[in-house]
Each structure stands twice: as structure tokens, then as C-alpha cells.
Amino acid sequence: MAKHIVELPENSIAIQSLKQIIQNKTIEYNIRGHKLNRLGEVSGTLIGGNLAVLYGLRATPYDILKFAKGKILFIEDVGERPYQIDRMIRNFELSGVFKSISGLIIGQFSDFEEDPTMGGTVYELISKIIQKYQFPVCFDFPAGHVKDNRPIILGKKAKLIINKDNVCFYQ
Image 1: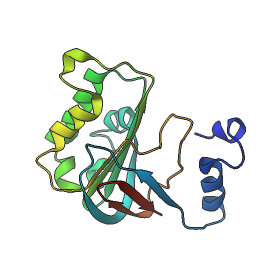
Image 2 (image 1 turned 60 degrees about the vertical axis):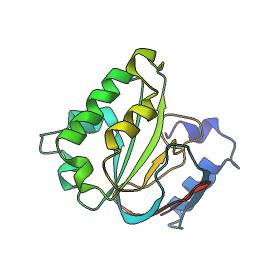
Image 3 (image 1 turned 90 degrees about the vertical axis):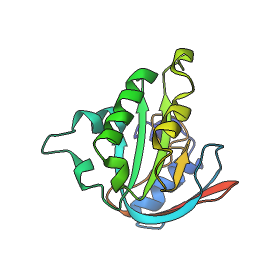
């Protein structure tokens, strides 16, 4: 989020990474692993963004997910209730998005409350829906509507390596 430029210290990872991107330098993030991650390595063009926006563009001329084949999908959201997130993820599953992609990066879901009646956390719900697919999955990637918001470039090639203890992202 651009607002972080004035909120974060200049030496923060988010600001330093943004400067690297502006200078056309490679960015590399090494983050701690998550218990729901699915191990693997994948390279491809990074697509995605805000889950609700992607969902709202389905079946329109602006639906980028119809071009998801072989791509790495990134999703995040802010202020959506767990049942809404579940509905959007199930739409992606039912429409074949998860059959097409080669990897999934799940960023931050912020400004919401978990719903105990849903049978698990938002991340657990997503994990259950995508369990039948074989692509590598990174949960809790530091990008979204949060302070530790690592910049990534949609539409650019990326490499994702998910190990047991850590995740490496290159772009």
C-alpha cells in the first residue's frame, strides 16, 4: 500500500524493497514457513491481487483469471467475513482456476474476525478447498493491507521456493 511510504521507517524491508523495484533490481524475500504451506518450487508470471476485486471481475472482459494457466496466483483481502472469503474461493475452485495455476501465494487477510462456526480459520478453509491440487502453496505471505507489506509485481515472472521452514520469493 502506497500509504506505507510515509508511515514506515525508511530502513523497513517494505520501503527498501520498493526502492529496489523502482531501481529495477531483483527482490528476494525469505520468510518463515507456515504450517499449512505445501512444499515445492515454481516459476511463472505472478497474477492476482485483492480477492474480492478478482471475484467481482469474474465473467467480465476484465477477468484476468481466465488467463491463469501456468501462472502463480496471489490473493489477499481486507475486511471480508470468513463466509464471504469461503464463497469466493469456492467460486475459483468450481470455475477451474485451481486446475490452471501452477502455484498459489496467500497473502494477508486483515480487518476481520475469524468465525468459529466456519469449522476453521480462513487459512484452514482455503487449505481444505485446494487440498486436491498439487501446486505449491504459501500461506501468510507478508503482502496485503498490513504494515509489513512486501511489494510484489503482478504481471512479472516470479520464483517461489517453499521448504519446510521457510519460503523464498524472487522477482
